[in-house]
Image: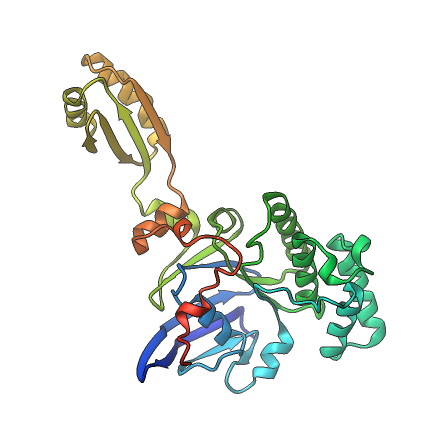
Length: 330
């Protein structure tokens, strides 16, 4: 028995565009333990969706190997699909179908008996607060309600592993918070492993035990969010002065970079250092007219690793990178 829910070695996907090979995913290694919630981040075109499609057997790899939920993605794709749940960016339910009918059809698709399907559907309708809309057509639901239906469809067969591809994109803040409350509670009660892609870095920071960052088809970082932020060297502190000469003099005491009358310093425990610096500078006749302190964020990590902010990519509906990391010629 193994505790690994996902193991990938040398996973590669090459397409051809205008007669030329294009590597969307290059020699990717992954390891996800059972019960983990892992956030998989990257700018549009980084290769996230291609990697996700290979792991879920929707796209065959060009090279490499992977075992997902105990099944080889090449040799036993049906076994992988039986054991995983997948919630993509589009709505999963048939728009003209009733919510409860969609859940029952999903149970039949996975070979569950009628009684087991009805019991499981009822459990999910209750836990995801879909009772008031269970007999309504999917097309009549709000965005948040549709995403909860998607989660229910992905969980109906009690998968060991749930893939979530941008599950909260396009939702308002209240619906996002509500959706994650349900996902976390279901995970707490079932121990389901979750592999998540998201453009909302606050979700990754708050929810994931581990964060992977992908760029140009490769995994370039893999660690906990606190560890990744710690690698940036500390908090960002700014000190403003009445003149550029005062700022230059202050920088000789505290270090950092001078931009006009402002000194910017990166330092561990900047919140504790700030009062000490202000007192020391005042003793030397240098008055701090304004000061700010900001702890590093995952967006800072992302910027340092990729040279761009994930916020620049835009967390908007339809921002899936599939179009950019999979050439049209494929």
